[in-house]
Each structure stands twice: as structure tokens, then as C-alpha cells.
Length: 204
Length: 258
Image (cartoon, rainbow over all chains, first blue to last red; front, side, top):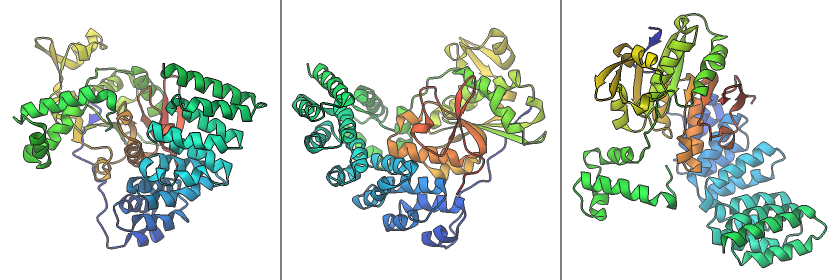
């Protein structure tokens, strides 16, 4: 039979070699830095260390592990380390940061008011996705306040999409007022109607 | 593992089963028992929550893709006699790793040219014992022709069949928690991983960790097959999407640009 059974693999976790995590990040191989990122999630100064490393790490695989470690730490500090990457010029980097923040919803929520008031509409738009992970009432309240003041139609569209899932009857007049502020935007008119119908039907 | 409000009944039923099994009439008593880690109760508790229903040749379009496309690509850079490593995780009671073995013996013309190692892993030690024993009921065999059943099983009676010893001895089983790198990494790197219908049970953070571990367990250029409703693209940007006629699978790139 061509099928073989081997007792076990020899690819065990490398034994600690006395180097600090910072030293491994500075001089280690991709595999070693990946493992260091994993271990940094449990280190007392993990978020600060990962903040420093993330600013210069180039390997996509290690960067992904760093974002995951920050999500695993899941503190206000580790979320704060992730936030600047929402402003990256690279879409992949923005997505990586957003995915990491969504994986630590409670920590990310602490920064949400600031993000929804950010001067950059792209950041406000991404923040709507972070709101999606909040309890429905909290998400609807935060996005309702945003919709009342938002001047950028794309941000409104993102907020409306989330509100269609989380909103209740209290969201309906907010949606109507938002549509009224953008009478020449057919997509927004459509999105408000679709969201209102959905909220209306789910609250009957 | 995440259970939402809709799974409340399922969770209550499993906990009640464990309370009865450990003779704890109250939840607080059982919870204290669980936390004290007496008699491997944590392991038994995990076992009670895992879903283990499957059958031979489930989603066989992926098995077809394995022999038609994936292994052909993997052996392009191998020499005859080289190892080909395939990992079934979670493997439940063994239907998937044994299906892979039977499928390759039946359908891959180059099967004799390579050393094929199949490893089945699961977090549930109870199902691993059943997998190693290799005894299956009628329902598990429903997708296999009578000829295949006759060729690879012997009948025990009472609608039960056992995988032939040769085949049973050719698959190695191991306990693995997919989110524990210290458990996944010792399994080594694989040419193909079957990881179907498990990531959907993880929360976002655990799913990311598991996906990165699976990436770590793939050889560069190796493939991972998920369940047909799952998408690695929604979990990790590291994998390449590969569309074949029979299945969509994901690949660890040969080399990532730094």
C-alpha cells in the first residue's frame, strides 16, 4: 500500500533561546518573528512592543500575526496601536487594521466616538463597520448621531447599511431626515428606503 | 467556539448531560467541578460540544479536485518516492481521512509513485479513539458503492463495518486544538489540508489565529480546502484563491514579497 504512517513530525516549536522578543523581531527569520508576534500577545509590554515592530515590519505574514496579536491583547492601548493603519494609503493595510479592530469589538468601541468624528471621511466610513460589532442599541445610537450631522454621502451610505441591521423604529425619522439632505443622490434615497423597509418589517 | 443565543438549547442540553454524567445535580456544583479540572472534565466538556456527524465521500467534488488538480500541481516539483502529506482537521470519527485514502487508492493514477502520509486530527479525544477503531454504521457509508465497501471494509454484523487493518494502520490520528500553535506546529507542514466546517464555529479572533496556524502548517504552494460555505478570503489575506472546475481552494503562495 502506498500509504505510509509516520510516528510524528519533527517540526516542534523551537525552544526559547534566551533572546528577548525585541531581539527576535530585530534579527530573527520570518518564522521566528511570526512566533515572536504570537508570543508578544502574552507579554506584559506586548502592545507597546508590537506598536514599535508594526511600524517597520515588512513581511505580510508577520504583519498579519502582529495585528492578530493586538486583537488578542484586546485593550484600549492595543486598539490605539491599530487605529493609525485605518489611514494607510494601502487598501490592504486599512482592511487589516479594520479586521483586527473588528476582532476586538469592546476595545475598539472605546475609540469609536473619536473615529466617527474624525476629520477624514474615509476613517468615518470604516468606523461604521466597527460600530456593526456593538450591541444593536449602542450601534444605532452612535450611527444615528453620525447621520444627523454627516455631510459626506458615502459615509451616510455606510452608516445606513449598518443601521438596516441594527436599527429600530427610532432610527426611521433619522433616516428620513438624512435622505432629505441628499435629494440629488439616488443611491442614498434608495438605501434609506431599503433600510426603512427592513427596519419597519422587522419591528411590525 | 462561539454559541449565540440561538444555540442556547444546544448548550443547555450538553451541560445537563455532563452534570448527569458527573453526578452534579446543580450547575454551581458542576461549574466548581469543571474548574477544579477533576478527572479530565474539561476535556469531556469540550468533547460534549463538538459536532461529529459526517460520512464517507462527503463533498466529493473536493476529493476529485484533490486527485485531478491539487496533487498534480504538488508533484510537479517532487520526485518519485517523495512524501506527500495530507492533513484532515478536524477529522471527527475518521470518515474524512479514510475517504481521502480510499479516493486516492481508487482515483489517483500516481498513487504508487509517492509515499502518501495522511494525518487526522481533532480536539475531541473521544472521536479520535473511534477513528482509530474504524468502525462505521450504514449511514456513514451511504455514499460508497457496495464494491468499495467490499474492498475496504469487513462486515461486523448489526449494520456495522470496520475499515481494513492495512488502511486503518496507514492513517495517524492526533489531538490538536487549531488555535494552539504549540499543538498545530508539531504536526509539521502539509501539501494539502482539509479543514471543513470548523472555522465557522470560531469567533473573529480565534478564526484569525486558526487561519494563521493553518498557513504555518502548509508547505509553500500547499493547498487548503474549506467547507463549501466557507471563504478564507474573509478571514485572511495571506492565501491565494485557486479556482478549479470542481472546487475553490486556497493556496499558501510559493513566496511572499517582503
